[in-house]
Image 1 (cartoon, rainbow, N blue to C red):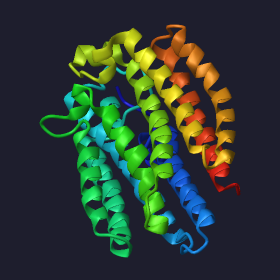
Image 2: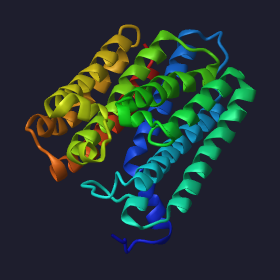
Image 3: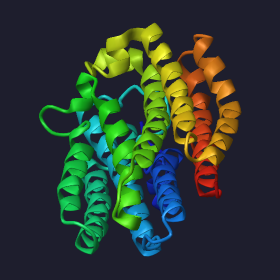
Length: 301
């Protein structure tokens, strides 16, 4: 199947802009955790904002790189030949595998370069984390034994777009990691995982036929729906825990009103194309959650 799209618009769609909140939110929340640290300890050096900006570049470039790498690897394996969801460049024939692979390498290269600068400015241990993140980004659906095909994709998302991105941003900003940034990272990671879970819930029939044993395929339809609900609940619990010493964080619970519609649709048993809107709704939930948690964390106690 060919696509009428071309040029920059094609590559923007291929980058999957609806997934980008998963990259921005942990950086914003991590920076807010750094502000809270400085607020509670005035003797501490202030937030280094240019490092926060570099952390945002790393996170965004890694997300785009993952998206292109996933498009390339699934496309050449034939997993995307019969898709229900949004356009995939290789699977639709809109772009060649070589071009998409180059785009993935370029995006991951940007992440590597920005990460290296951060490591030099703070701690060379960040280089180790960066190498692991890039290897995990490619190995999700790429390589001889992609771990996304054996149900471990959610682990990657939770670790790197939750814990690492959030706590890592806090470290980049003030060269310290505290419990608050880790707990907040768990909440952020839970909602990032919820995006992947609902995507894989939609794709259970096609992934099963293609031999792609995602966590959704392994858990089955009912189990995956319960997992989605559990991840939303985990995000709520994280806010409550963070609010123990930063009460303003409770404002993030207002974001859960944005989660009611996707939660109801998932619970209703919707399948196929009916779940596409849930992806957008979950992305909006994550964005609102991130904005409100960021605001709540920087509010003075």
